Amino acid sequence: MGAMAETESPTARARTFPATDPERRARERELVRRAQEGDLPAFEQLYRENVGRVYATCLRLCCEPTLAEELTQDAFVRAWEKLKSFRGDSAFSSWMHPLAINLALTRRRSQKRYEARVTATDDVTSLERPQRAPGREAGLDVERALALLPPGARSVFVLHDVEGYRHDEIAEMTGVATGTSKAQLHRARKLLREALQS
Image: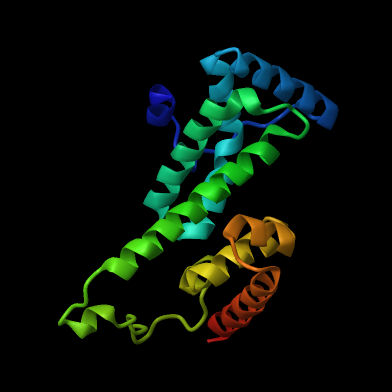
């Protein structure tokens, strides 16, 4: 895994699969089988073909490129450790993706607990949100607007509207009620509209 982390960046373009879906699935199953037997080059190929999507999801959830790279690497280390439990009922990416999401959500919860324990500061200006610089373009792109969302709303938006998870699945992943997930999505969409219109 060490050599893989040094030679490949999460933002690197993934290699393309063969043209047809059955060929792709057969090829992927073979790579997984070899990787489960300890073949590191086979796992590195799975890494190269999936790292872009995993990194993009982590980045959308945490909005920090360095942290997203760290989470991506952690997700693939976890996948390597748990690979023998992958039965092949779904695509490797379908199995891999929730590992990355769970790591990102766990990191966010840990960060929230840490921030709750931090003592108060005398410098209240350090807690203020930065003001928009004069002359800055009025519109924000979606990624920048997404970064402005509160973490809970951002997570639900990414999981539902970007990744396609249902509210009951999101509730299970994030540990909130289904109704809370729906409310967070409504809030996220409203805040995004406001940010993109300002």
